[in-house]
Amino acid sequence: MASSPTRAPAATAREAVLSLRGITKSFGAVAALTGVDLDVSAGEVVAVVGDNGAGKSTLVKILSGVHAPDGGTITFESRQVSIASPAAAHQLGIATVFQDLALCENLNVIENLFLGQELRALRLDDVAMEVRSWELLRQLSAKIPTVRIPVASLSGGQRQTVAIARSLLGDPKVIVLDEPTAALGVAQTTEVLNLVERLREQGHGVIMISHNMADVKAVADRVAVLRLGRNNGFFDAATVSAEDLIAAITGAHDNVVARRATRTAPSTSSSTGKAAQP
Image (cartoon, rainbow, N blue to C red; front, side, top):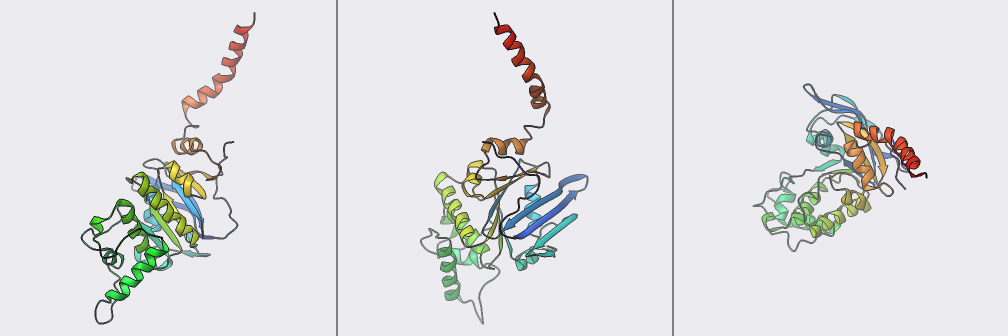
């Protein structure tokens, strides 16, 4: 049975740790986002899906402090906040793992994890950073043989693991994953989806941007669809079909061809029935 979309974020048993209401952002005459709402609770994975140009990247940049919204409100842990910069997002407890991962391939795992936030007294504390690196990787059940290996030697899934582990350094409440399985093979995709499950189990709120409906169905609790910069429905991931999600993403039920098919269907079946009579 097809799942019916709702026009507002579904209420959950837990209070939302992050709530967006009426978020609007324009670049000149182009409206990237218009009146967008979104909620995520602790221990919940919310997938945000949409076609190219739907506003997903702009939403990620607003949550990460790269862009400031033109309108709307952001509520974090029951208080209204402003995310003026990436540093402000980090201080609030919102971590973002961008699609390009932002890793330095010539540095090893430890150096990437602590780049810009090294542990030091009079000099770098290599031992403490290595211990903390293993703690973070064990939280994610990561399959990385050594933290002294250059990132260039790691697989795509292992690199994603390092990027997610780095986001955990500040003990965030919400983690935003921008296309975490893009360009990964089957085994690496499974590895990354397992990481998303671990984040949920540890009580993090996760916002996952994705184009892959199978990945969304595999790990998400709820799905928010964006279309042309606006909300176009909220779905229960356990009951919605991939076809319904694609229809909401593309607006398949809101076009001239679909409306014409609806108008002509009764008359077509009626005329067929008359022709079949002896």
